[in-house]
Image (cartoon, rainbow, N blue to C red):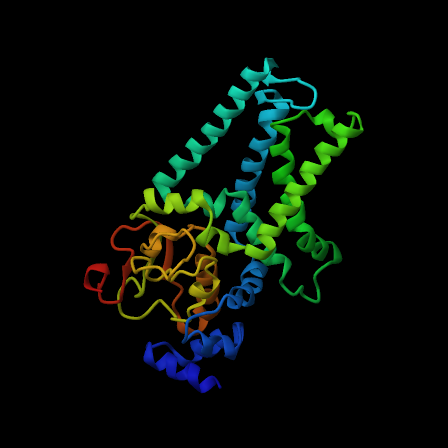
Length: 343
């Protein structure tokens, strides 16, 4: 079976030993199947290898979620804005308020959160979707929960990975409910108040968890009205993932052409060619280049860095062909200087 991997290596002028190392890192079947369009299951086959290495993006994603969820908690708990449907303890600007004032504060707060995400996406494309959106992070946790744990993984880490999606769903829904009632409604109200507060929260947690568990990234690709709106109005064409096939001196291919970046992409894009039309999305998604739909999540960068690192000693090439930032040229440049305009 590995002979097909050799044929691919010859076709793309990749060192044969480097090709073998690619196969060893993943498996022969993966490398052979990478000659065809990767299937959704391939993401879960590569993700364990990527996650096991650790990466700066992992910490940054958790930090982004801390800011998002922390903001959801801070607004009602601090009294900046809250409508208390249970006891009437409405708040605005840290003081007692009428229900109209509290409602106005909540509406303004929601509008300001939208403005912040809108500005982020106008400048950077759908970057908030890949880093700050709690639903996108839930999808990622659901991916991790389905990974087969390593034999040496401690029991607490296995429990964390399994419970992660449900825990994150609660951390998203609970503060959202607090915008509409006080914290006291969850422990000191009468039976009806307690039942409604916990019932609404439980229903919300189950609904969000079900969305992540069974819809996963398809929701981001086909259904999310906010994300797909950003795909239309904020397709930043000079920031994001860009591809440089050749080494800096243009003498060799930096790219292994292993297609690991394509397989690990959560929204079925080709990071090496985001100017090309994206695969059909379905749902309410627009037909547009991949750059419009890219979440800027960096999964492809992680996979690419892993593969290059694993083959650097053999090939003598440690340049990573996929990069994240300002393009400084075309999104896609092939060895020899061929870019988008010539494709």
